[in-house]
Length: 543
Image (cartoon, rainbow, N blue to C red; front, top):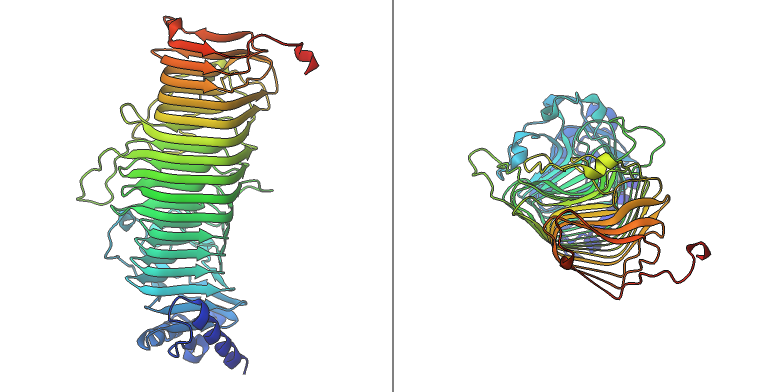
C-alpha cells in the first residue's frame, strides 16, 4: 500500500514540476525498481533490475524510475530519453567496487577526456529530457579504488551531448574520481545538491565541460579537488552559465575556469558564493587549505569573455584571486591542430571579501604581446598575513608561458596584494587592502599595463613601512585618484621603466613622507599631479 501511495504522489508531483511531459499528461508513469527485481539489500548486485526498469520506462515513452528506501548495489546504469531516476529519502544507490561492473564507454563526442576516464555509474549520451532527483544518496565507495589507476575509477554521473538535464536534491558522496561530468550538454540545471567527496584523487565536485545554457544553484560542496569547474576540453565553447547561492569547501580551486580551455568561455555569471577551506583536520591530500577562491585560466587557445563575478566571501585558501592567460597550447585530441593563442577579456569582479589567506598575493597576468584585456575589480576587501621580504619585492617573475596554471605558480609575488602584468584596460575601484604583519613588498605592482585606472584604493598596514604602496613599471596611460595609503607609509608611488602619461589627482597623501619617487632614468614629466592633499593639516597622533 505504501509503494502504491508513493507512486500516486510521484505521478502528481512529476506531472506538474518536471518539464517533461506536460502537467496532466496521462503518459507519466512510475516504475518501481522493486517490481523489476531490485533487492535493496546493499549486497546483491541490482544493476540488471534497475536497468530493466529504466528500459521499460524508455520503451513506454518515459516516466519515473522510483528507488524506494533501501541500498541498491549497482554497476553502470544507462539512462533513456524522458526518464527520471528518483531516489526517495532513505534510498542509497551504492556503486560497485568491481571493475567488471563498468563497461568502458567511448562517446561519439570527442574531447581531451577521451584520454582519461571512460567509465561511469550513471551514464547518458545523446539523450533528451532526463533527470536524477530526490532526497536519496549516491555513494561511489571511492576509497576502494587505487588512486594511481585513474582510468579504473568511475564517475558517479556522466552526461554527454544531452539536452534538458536536471539533477536535483540528492546527496552525492565518496566518488572515485570526478563526482559529475557534463560534456557538450545543452539546457542543464543542477540545484540543491549536497556533494561530499574527500576519498580519492581528482574528486572535483562538478565539471561543466563545453556546455551551454546552464544553471547551478543552492548547492553545498566539500570535495578533495576543485569544486565548481568550467572546462572546455574540446572545440565546443562553454557559454551562458549562471552559478549562484552555493557553499563550497575544497582542496584546490573553488570556482575555476580551465585549465582546459580549447573552446573557451562566454557569458558567465557567478554570484552569492561562500568559499572556505577551514577544517579541523587535514583533507585527503594532507592539506588544510584550498589553492584559490576564484581562478580564471586560459592556456589552450579559446576566448574567455563577458564574465561577471559578484558577492563572494573567501576564507582559508592560499590565494583568493588568480587570473591567467598563458600559452600551453595543448590540442584536445590526437590529430587536431595545436591551438592558437587564446584571448581573455571583459571580466567584472565585485563585492568580494577575502580573509585568512596566505602571503603569495593575487596575480593578474597575460604574456608578452598577448595581454589580458578590460578587467574591472570593485568593492574588494582583502586581508593578507604579511611576511614578504626585500628579496620577494626585487624578484623577477618568470613568464612561464607554457606551464600548467595554478595560483601559486610564481611563488611569493613582488606585491603582497595584487601583481598585474601584461594587461590592457585594468580598473580597480573601492578596494581595501590590509596586511596583518610586516611586509617589505608594495601593496600593488603593475608591470606592462596600459590603461590603468585606480579609484579609491585604501592600504592598511599593521606595521609602519618605507615600502611604496604602488609601483608602476612600464605603465602607460594611468589615472590614480582618491587613494589613501596607510598614514605610516613612507612612500606612495614609485614609477619605473618606460612609464608615461600618468596622472595622480585627489589622493590623500598627508602622512606620506615621499609622495612620488622615480626609478633610475625616469623623466619626472611622465607624472601629472594635481589636487592631491599633500600637506598635513594636523598631527597624525590626533587621528
